[in-house]
Every structure is written in structure tokens, then in C-alpha cells.
Length: 216
Image (cartoon, rainbow, N blue to C red):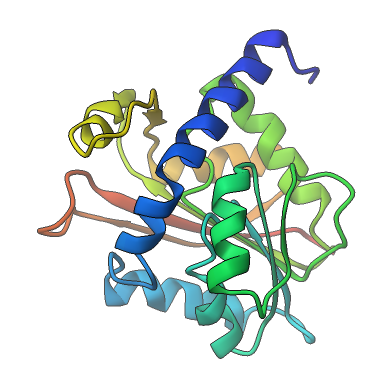
């Protein structure tokens, strides 16, 4: 699937938005404060499925807050993100882990890919291409974990940032866990585990996690 000028413009808008909020976001969420125990249990299960040496790509790592968790579970971690501002914070706050600005091209083949809320700004029409690329960089027999807000339709999350003084435009695409699992199946991945849970007290929407395998 070839990218269009509209696709590039959408990526630029997301990049600019996260460059703008990078410091505020990194200061607000330094570790796994927003996650529930069940969310972290899904990450632990994902790691338990990986073959040694458990090389993990944190795809859309943001400011890098999940990389220490993965390392603590025995993974060798590296991160990539579209936003230079986020990578600057990742390198400052978590410099022990390699991270760089990149799309998912020309990357070493990891045993696992963590996509922790990094596809939520991807429009439906682009999602198959993104999932195909995530599968491509994954070793045969490797696993991918995707986390995202569960639901339907598109949510404009710009007002939440503007209320905090950040002039950004940002939209989130909500999907059910079953739908994402089906999309993964169409690109050659096999569902291993699925979580869909109600919103916690500090959240506005339900949350979902899907783990899938790239067959050997």
C-alpha cells in the first residue's frame, strides 16, 4: 500500500503534536502510573512467550517509560518513535536504552514488538499497512503486543491538551480487541491472548490488549 500526501500530512500533525507535549507528557507519566495490574500482567505474559535473547522493539516508545519495565523482565530493549521531542526525552530520561527517531523500516529483527498505544492515531485505512510493517520487522516465531483504547469511531483528544495550554490537533481511532485481532489475522498473525476491560476511575474509555504470533 503506497502512502499518499494525506498520510504524510497526518504523520506530520501527530509528530508536531507530540513534539509540543513531550516534556509535559514525560513529566506526568514517568513510569507505569496509568496502568492497572492486569495491563502489566499482559506485558509479563507477552515477555514470557519470547525466545531468548528476548530482543524487544518498543515501537512508538514515546519518552521511554515502558523500556525499564521490559528490561526488568529480562528483555534487551530498543525504542523508536516518530516524535523527535519524545526521543529527546527518552534519551535524557532512559539513556541506558538505545532509542531513535524512525519509522518502522530498516530495523533489526526482534523477538518481540511492543506497540503500547502507538497505533491509536492511525486511521483505519492505514492500519493494515502499519500491522504489515510490524509483522515484517518481527522474527518468525516472534510475538507482538498491541494496546489501545477500545470502542468505535474517532475521538478528538485535542481539547484535553488545549486545556493544559498546548495548541495541538490530535485524533484517536478507537477499535475493539476483536477487530484488531482480525486485522492482525489478515496480515498473517495468529491471536495468542486478548484483554478487553472497562475504564478505570482515572480513564474515560475502555482499554484493550492483543498479543499475536508471527508463525515460524
